[in-house]
Image (cartoon, rainbow, N blue to C red; front, side, top):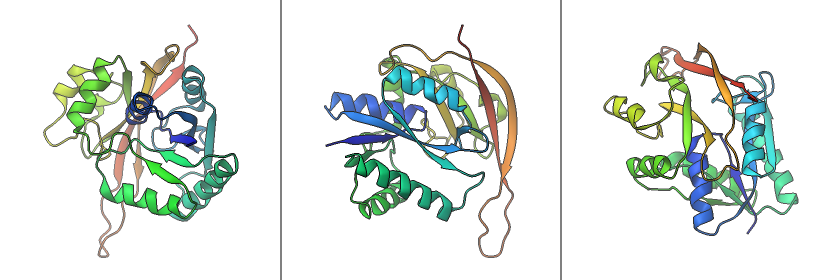
Length: 234
């Protein structure tokens, strides 16, 4: 079994890697979708240099899927299929994900990768998210919220370290792990790292993205806040 992990740089992917090791499932590479134009992790907005620092500290080779700005599904699926085909040629047989309870997303991943003869693994699947967050903090992981969806959380959550105080302040109805897209994170330390990834916080910016049109109704655009993280070598 030769596994690559779909690595977002965030806490769920990090916890999936940690739990996989506990289950004696050994990941041999990381795969991350990147915005080529901005040189940042897609959706999370984290700089490539910090992603590379993560991979170096975790001691796993990093592969990237290079995407244009605001790629459509066709662009995304074509680029992903090409990269997975390359990984398969290198001997990879399984893809690991940090998904927790989104059934449609799991089914989508399994369907697309089955076409490429790749088997999916979900170490966190159907685990209660409050339990996962307790384990994440208790085992020494450290993460910061780098992107928040204004539909769920206000700007004040962006750039906060994810600790018990962060959890206590989450509004009712917001999943503690952000599994519904409420927020995204960057993990900078923990049991899978050989050393912490050093950074300092930069500015917080807002960006709008078009929401899907349903029944000829054009909805309000999605607004996200991003906290820029700057590499800090001490």
